[in-house]
Length: 295
Image 1 (cartoon, rainbow, N blue to C red):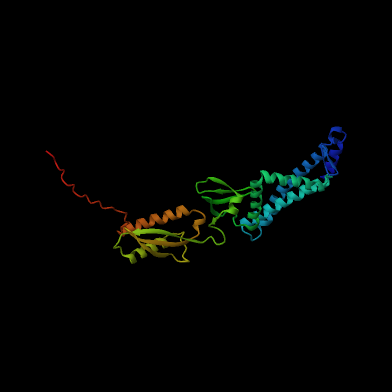
Image 2: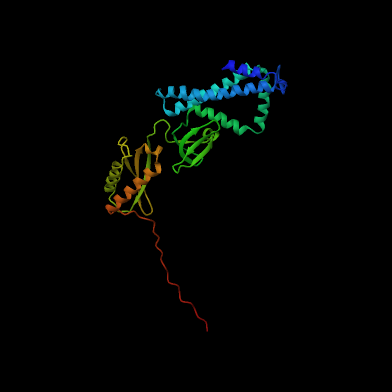
């Protein structure tokens, strides 16, 4: 491949305008010919990166015991390293004076200081996400009022798809600087509690039995740890309880899971003739004194 490229550039080297210096970098002169060589090298590096990841890296990672999120992170980091190394080799092979890149780095530093802070912040945050993996592909997270499943992590942003199939693009810096609720991080098993209010005078032991039956009948409720019923408080118009259940469904369909349990609880309470009260206000009307008449 390198020999073919050399013959190609040798065949067009006779064109004088290709050797006209556009700019200089240290001891190297940048010409249209050298610039074209670098661009073609970069094109081959990018194509090689895609082929390497699809044909070698990804099949190799699938044979490992790593989870999908870690495999994705390793593949991404490998791709970034491959492209960076390829860019360095492309400049080196084509005679670019790399010592002059310090000047470019200084100019980039000035640009970053004036207007590229957010871009660089998101870039660095993306590397941190891939390295530390506080958020991985497939995790269900809540950040900045957005709740959904992580489907893609790029260098600038992360894509979160909600249960309504809406894609939300979250800047990577938000995932680093803001508190995140990750329902899938580590152990996907979580507990949550459903509040239930019943009328005063209700048989509380009977209510406890009914709520535990509802939890036992739902396929998404884990047997271990076992469900629990908590007597929360004495309200203004109700006795307030909570049904605590453990589940792994919070990472996939939390609203549906909660809704199904609420439907079952309401049906069971209605069948058992247990009243679910609502606030009531009693208004007393006092008679108005008769109006005095004047003659």
